[in-house]
Length: 199
Image 1 (cartoon, rainbow, N blue to C red):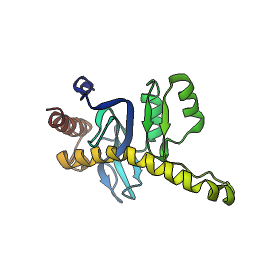
Image 2: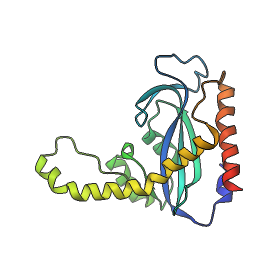
Image 3: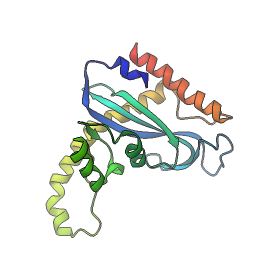
Image 4: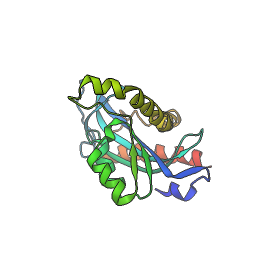
């Protein structure tokens, strides 16, 4: 997106935060009737909510004590996995430290990414199925410390989404009546928020 042209000088160009948020056309037991070519059913774990709609995926440059500055935004149907979006859209970026949540745990993929692109994905430690309790207990303190550090670094991406929702109410798209209307809803609200962010 064009926002890269307005990159603030306080951005860490080698550190990116990433996450997604739902944009909801309907939820609960209601069935989707609009924009079916763009939307499908997904689950938002932070809201414990099944919904119809899309996901807004953001990749943003880290800044100290400020909300991150968006580098790229992707819109997908609600069911699309965040890791899939990363692999398809952002895995070619070089010399980058990414900070994500546990959904981005894929040791084989990110080991290869580090070798080929010198890019690293940092996520909270995910428990290993079948690991013996003795090893879990031994590693717990270090894993908890690392996970807390990563979560603190990536927390501002959640603040970015909260800011976007507060400024535009982008998350609620229940009044949209067509695919074109949904796109206007999303990109119109993003544009208005980013104009405020840039200027």
